[in-house]
Image (tube, rainbow, N blue to C red; front, side, top):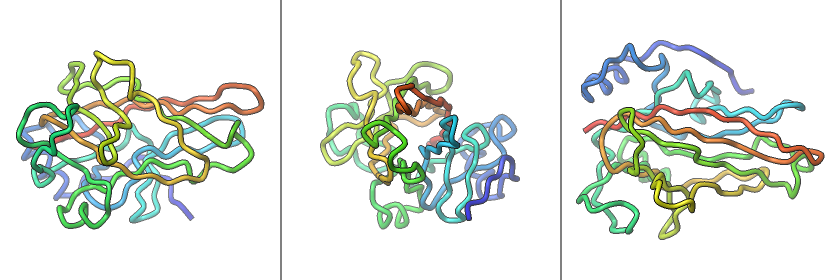
Length: 213
């Protein structure tokens, strides 16, 4: 059984991570997740409305997105793999698409889930997750992307309308690389959308990600 929680106390480790980033910990949500398997985008249907949660797979606990800060430590830095959309910097901060790599680096293993949705409810047994907007330190940013191999799933680059939305099968559980090109505080707004009995249903939430230098 999954536990639903809205507020927890920031752990000493999480608070230290935020302090290291030079940020005021009081400005962020009380729950900070910095490692382990976490489905950042996790949709549920309660029979009348869609909802977005953050699902901590390690403790089987759900959080409201507004109640969580996702911490990306300096240990997440890797050499830029050279994909054109990742900019010209020599390094990026990466939350990897394999659990072994995430555990080795001590960072989050981020998932995108539709596994808690019931087959037969949504048209074509499919939903979409859309990246609505992305900011870093309060300004629109082009420094965030999600990709698998050489395929972009999401890109915050405002110069293109591509790589903003992706469909996922009901029941699916997916992982990809989450990349950040600069340190700072990111606010990522996503929308989940699907069609139920001919009616478009959706839910939108903003996620806070603190990337430490």
